[in-house]
Length: 165
Image (cartoon, rainbow, N blue to C red; front, side, top):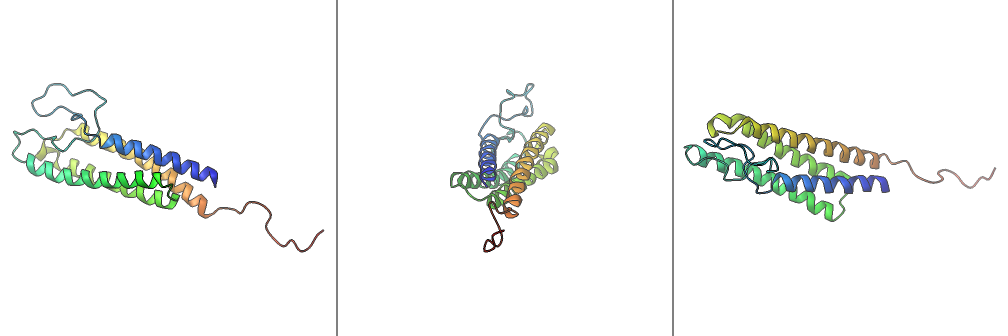
């Protein structure tokens, strides 16, 4: 049980760090239309809300739609942090990380479907997919710990102790 709690705690910490890095208001990780060079590679993998070039007529709609998806993912990421801080069960952690992963998938699908209309680089989708793979790995670890906790074999003696042999 202690090992399961340790795994869950460490995974919560990793997910919280991952969520914080993913949603930091960093610079756009790929060059904007008209820009020759991408900003530094330590930029956030998720574009900030103001990531569209002003010259694109669809940019306002793109920014609004993506901002809503991003906000949903941020809210789910915050729930993970709160659960970690209060030492939530591995079952709850599994569910919260899965929900966060669903939000990432929604952002990936949006970027893939609207890349041409919104002028989104394929690098953005690639980075979002890479971050989502990390989330899936963490989710798998936490959910496995939750399953192990549910199937926990009792420790110590079990059975009828009235008979001494």
